[in-house]
Image 1 (cartoon, each protein chain N blue to C red):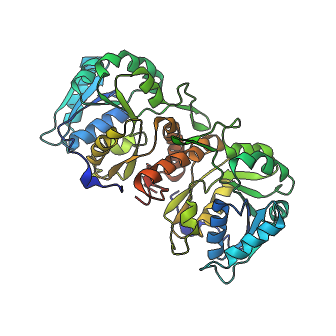
Image 2 (tube, rainbow over the protein chains, first blue to last red):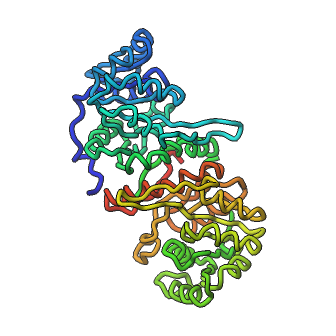
Length: 232
Length: 232
């Protein structure tokens, strides 16, 4: 069962909501999905801020004519989306996710939050009682199907309109195997990206934490590093 | 400061010892270094087993005419080597490393051990009191310079004489920046490999643990997966 982009489902009709869509990572993902022609909803704590971010994203170069980019308060975004990306800062993660349990029921939830701390020696992985951010989300969202993905995408690359292609594998951790192809298909909407199943939720911690290594790599080599899985 | 293979030091004169050189990972690394023409010493608990493994490796196809592959008891290998790779099973890691503190004093120590458990759901990262295997080694070897590297190399690929090239980045974690180029140069002796600085020891845990994800990827995609860092 090799990775086969051509075997992935058609996800072009799905609406993708981004909780925390006004932050760098959420905004960058929203932009890339909008470039691909996906319907995107930006979520924020206030509808006003979400609407403003949506307008800004829709006006960026390369956004597909068919794409619609809307903005709304987080709960409404959750309700109106098929796939909901959680892209909030770690310190608001538990509270934000818990408050959305009802509107997220029945939805596919993609958590891309990395619990990192920073000190003068740089970034490091924070301990998480549940094991990882995505396990925390899964515990708080018993009626949703949850995965980790898009943890390693570089916000500056996502945001740069000059960049057409981002060579990166999106590692997907989940207990719900049927999500893998859907999320992989969403990843494949961004040129250069592949979505790769990378294990169960109990093995998501190290993928989130690996973002600290990517930051160290970026600093040393002046890069916007990601990872590609070899032999696939 | 981009990755530049041509700027790496000449390490062809260094003797590489492999503690646990009779196991799959150690044996595979020894074989690849011997193919590159490096002097290699296989360590084991008994000189007899080490000598036998060394003879077997030296007889494999592709071993460079100039390479010497010797075998000796672990402590002697540590004493006679410039760079010593720790490739023992995790459950013997602390005891083996602690017993070698004296002969490893002043040496470069490369720990490639991954603390993993396995149950019917597959592999998972084991908790380590010191944070990671390499941090445990660093704590036990105060007079050595320690790094993590070669954690993700696939033993079956290393061992396959038909395979000339292994596309993989070797992630190097250490507190000793001057080790990075030496270990990167050793990695580059294996065609297809690059050695990349990936952060301090406190960020090594997730690199060791990521081996569980690679095992999940291998199972799903019938691969021998590694990772390549993009944008370098």
